[in-house]
Length: 361
Image (cartoon, rainbow, N blue to C red; front, top):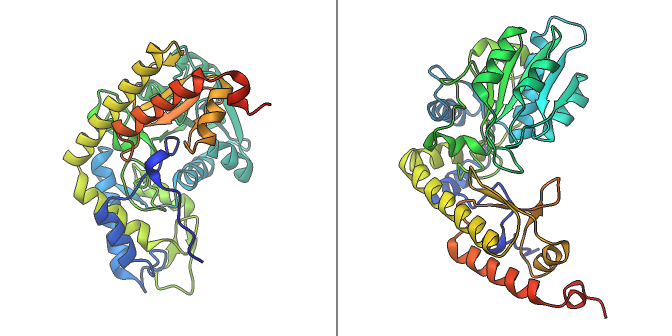
């Protein structure tokens, strides 16, 4: 079988990207290692400690603890699990803005906790007063999003942290996508800015590591004790991760990518992505489309369905927000030339008669 993966030259919807060359090479060298068995694979276990330390530096966590997960879904589920185990009440709940990732719905189902969804404000950020009205003595965690998947918005993390502390809940920040660009902005989102207890931050997104390489950080290592299970046949005595066998390739590539790019490479990449997002937003607005002003490098615009479908038919990998807008993520592989070609296709397809666009006779 000689199947080839999707080329990246028309991928505009993904929050993953081509790995950095150093990350690709490291992943290949560590393909057959398992950090879930540190006694057998001590070198990749040591690399995982280095990965956590590097992630902690990015997220301003002085004494970082955590592990390299399969991705944001696992990290979010584990954060919710920590909160559930720390909760005092018999019926714990988690409060999250409607902009939160769908992985929390999975987590609530698996863990048997109530998920309370609150609205966002006019800027698509968590409505602080709605969060305040939804928490109570049974709230185990308040979720804040630092780089939402649909609009790239950053919730008011310090305010959410204050609410969480008022009711004795943990504060979890989902920075799976935003964590590698937010250090170069003025947003308050990290462990230094707010009483963040747990954080999701994924090297295999803006970090340019190979998949799978997610990240879970915790402010205090004792929080991981809530996840620990005995591992009697391994040389290590317990394990806090969700999966047993894990990807040494992801761990090694995360370290390689971060060492190659932090901080200057990531800063330059963010500036390119920001400029590309602003250019695309302006180009679409100039053509009369309603555009959601980008904050982080993600563009949403109200493109007609027939034009959207025609772009998909021509090979553009694009997606929609929950409200139906076109959604373009300006990842490191997205160049200005790609966006210029995309806008040219928007112009050409939008100018065609409706029957030609839809394929009707």
